[in-house]
Length: 218
Ligand code: OMP
Image (tube, rainbow, N blue to C red; front, side, top):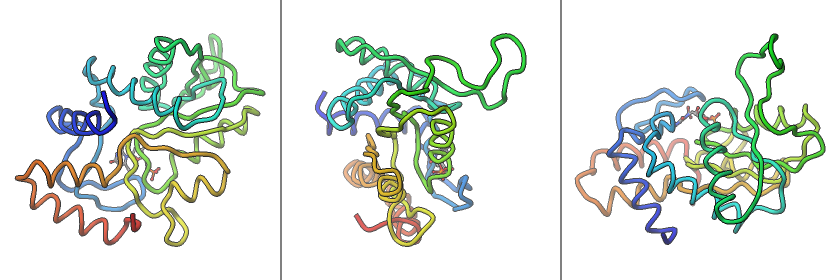
């Protein structure tokens, strides 16, 4: 599927399955948003399969050589797992790792599950980027484990300002860590879809007002 076809199909399916919602939502950053993307509801096998393909092709086209996919708890976990499968189907052998939110003190112990990160080149696979708190938590884990971060692929870039100045969170993270941060879809794609589809005038107006307050110029 071409990238633009994927985006249209994905946004349509996300709205139909309640993954992409419109209303009033308080975000992790405290910002009040007229839309919310809930990757926790991305449980349709077909949609997950096309999402995995999109992650795999984005990695192949935009991310340098790597060893391990890292899927942060919770929502990054299935995304990293299905991406590893999609890459394997393309002949790219890789491994993946995720963290637990609570450290386990019995059984195998520790807070990471999967391949070790020490001395490895890591790509983070995650759901949504807003102000960058979640991604910085992942970067801290990789550093603590003595892995090297080589790239980040996000399912949705909300194209918002980071914590400092007028740059987007993606620009901030790219600059600070010197790595590519690549989204699969972004807010511009979502607005374009809604405008093209029609019937979403009130939602587009609210999103554009929100974007004027927290977004970056694109
Ligand atoms: P930041 O940590 O501010 O970048 O926000 C990203 C995190 O917020 C994601 O990992 C989600 O946990 C959550 N989130 C969503 O899942 N969907 C959204 O549309 C917006 C957020 C959010 O709270 O900003």
